[in-house]
Image (cartoon, rainbow, N blue to C red):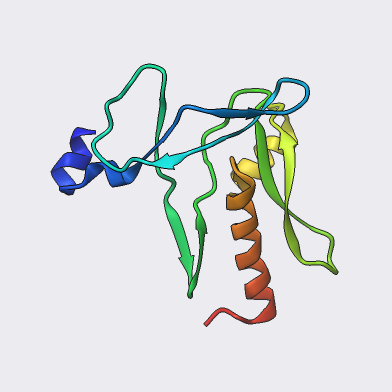
Length: 133
């Protein structure tokens, strides 16, 4: 974007692109494969672009910032769960625009990838173990 170009001489480093999707056996989109833009993107109409997620750092640990925008109904997302004895872990749900989904967004626990949610869970587990300086 123009703002990125004013702030850095490598604005493409702030963007990811995707031209593929992974579907489950029911034809539902379960994940997009996102890649770093290695150069200034061409903004092709058949390619999706997104600003890279912000990173939250806690000590030497980090995880992508949880989403704050509500996804489209039916979108698969991951949140943080805990069963007490095994600590925190990522769990997949389908966005249904109900009170539970809304609560997850407001608590800052929703992610669009399993990797992001698990990184968040790993940081929470590190805090509980006292591994955070």
